[in-house]
Amino acid sequence: MKSLSALFLTVLCFIIGFAFHAYQKEWVILLLPYQTADIQTQTQADDATYSQKKIVLFFWKHEQWHKEHNSVIWSSDVTHNVKTIINNLLTLLEDEKIIDTDIQLLSAVITSNKELFLSFNKDLFNAQAATHAKLMVIHALLKTLHENKIPVQSVRFLVHHQILTDDHLNFSIPWPIMGYVQ
Amino acid sequence: MSIIKSLQRIFSIQDNTPPITHSLHCRKQEGQPPHTGFLNSEQGRRPLSYPEPSILCNTQQNGLHKNIKNDRVAQTLQLKFTYVIAGFIILSTLNLHPTTNDQFTIMIDPAGDAKHTGRLIQDTLERGISLQCAEQLKATLTQKFKTIRVILTRVPGETIQPLQNASFANRLGVDLYVSLYFYYEPETPAHVTLYHYLENPVTDAWHKPMHLSLYQVNQAHLLNLKTTQAWGKIMLDVLRNRTISKFFSPRGFIGIPFTPLVGIKAPAIAVEVGLKNKQDWQQIIDPLVIAIERIMQ
Image (cartoon, rainbow over all chains, first blue to last red; front, side):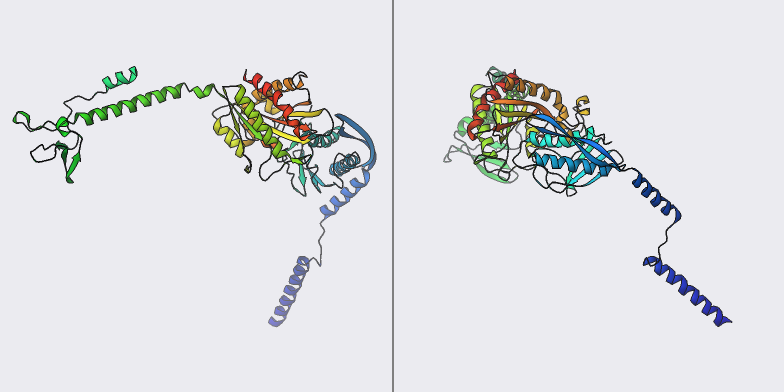
């Protein structure tokens, strides 16, 4: 009788141990009900909110502001919209020979206090450019975001997720969405 | 001199002053050189050499052995003491009403340094042109105004660390800080833009300076923000005047987070000038001198 119960306990421990090991190694995945519900909700929301929208892009050239309209796919995800707007603007600035080629926005994140982090793949400015020209590139970005009603209060500029460094402009602080130039 | 004489009278040492630590005995005996004296002290006897001990010392008059009173030593001490006191008083007076405060101190910061070459203007680097301009501006200002003191932040070959200029300017307590920048601009007329440091365009203007409080480096500009803005407008008005500034078109006076002006307490203005030819920097000297003259008024 004793040997039978010992055998039973051994088998039980083996089964429990194996199940735990399988969970640890992710052979068995537990998907709890609330997680399933969340994923489904988000998928439904994502599907529902894509639409076409006209955006307005601003740039400074020949001592005055110019604007251009563009059609883009608009989403309920604000960061997706920010990426779309900024990359469209960068293409426009490149066409107008205001900035160097192949500058892209890598990622955009909005924090809870409405601060937008923009991370680019390379420096935005030409090393020979005047401070005013650099300032107006930044203001073109800020003005475009503001006019397209992106709900942020300030913007931080990064290159490869590090603070953008410049000899003249200080990017270690957040830049207000309204900018400095009236 | 009247002060010194009165001080001499006040601080004159009386004849009956007792000997301080040592009793000075002067032996004037036959066969002994007249100029030799001895100092009795705990360490023993050691010779003293005075030019005329016979005048200095009175020994054993009327059968009494007196302590020798060295009148000349006393007089010398008295004079020295008087001069020290008089000097101290004069220095204190100068410190209360320093003449140097009448001087208007300007610090000029030419862009670039030994490591940072700056932008390229034709075949010349920005650091060279800015230094030439700063030296010329200094020479013109010091020649024209006696009450002005001009300091340059660097000499050729020097490397400037971050915030070094700000620390230098704050320690010296300069009245105005001017930073000079140049870039190549092919279009005419070339532009000139004035900048001052601003972090928040809304709340910075609300700040009320408090002199007994700690400020962060990036808040130092708040202490003299209103003066900076007023002086910047004066400079901009001069640059807008076509009779004074014929060659440059001013863009404006803009408050931005301008890195080279971080941490400076004094009113600090950066002047960025576009140049079509590398010699054109000479055209900005006169407008800047006139602007500084108006600021001083």
